[in-house]
Amino acid sequence: DPSYNIPNAPPEIGLATHRRAVRAAFAAWDAVAGADIDFEEVNDNGDIPVQYLGNWPREFGEFAAGITNTARRGGRIVSARISLNGQHFDWSTDGTVGTSDVQGVITHEVGHAIGLGHSFYREATMYWTGDAGDDLSMRTLAPDDVRGIRFLYGAGGEGRVCDTCIDDDDCAAGGICLNLEPNRSFCGEPCQNGRCPDNAACFELRSGGTQCAPIARVCSDEGVGEFADGDYCFGSNQ
Image 1 (cartoon, rainbow, N blue to C red):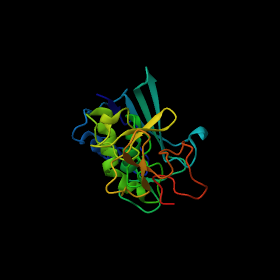
Image 2 (tube, rainbow, N blue to C red; image 1 turned 90 degrees about the vertical axis):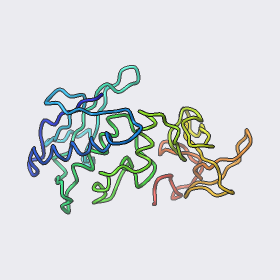
Image 3 (cartoon, one colour; image 1 turned 120 degrees about the vertical axis):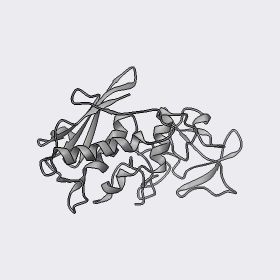
Image 4 (cartoon, helix red, strand yellow; image 1 turned 60 degrees about the horizontal axis):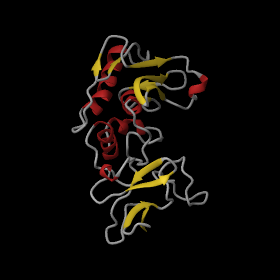
């Protein structure tokens, strides 16, 4: 089970308050039933150090509140480092206007540290971006976040439209693992009398039957979809 340590903190918060917020972020993932992962806090040399950087590396990008760098061996994450941007962001734990929320941002970054990518569901903690104040809501995991960690560390079998899959067993009952993008597959789900979730449509499969899939026929922002500029991109309300 991965360990983590908290060597420093934003000066405007203080180490004790900061540590409580970081612990709560890890606890959110720890609490997911059906996911076999447990975090342990250590004094130093953890698998996942959580550091505050007053001098933010240019290559991280000034608009990133936090970033997670992972080290992999044999395709598996063996360690990760979470960094908070102290040069371009002010931090709090109480929702102070104009600040970023430590617990919410760290909850998102812990998701990356354990292998999750960005979600295509706007309400998810792992959604790729947010507006000012959204980081408070990131403290609480959404159903898509829960499905994600269970896919990686549990039995899986709950995948909905655009959840990553390896085979049909990773998708909820009746869902089919669809090869929508090169080298990447995502779950569909059964059409309900021709009806599908928002921004998805009922498609006829070459092999027979039907499945709900995104209208653009891709799930990620890396996919080349069948849509024009300005059309809906899955997971966005824009």
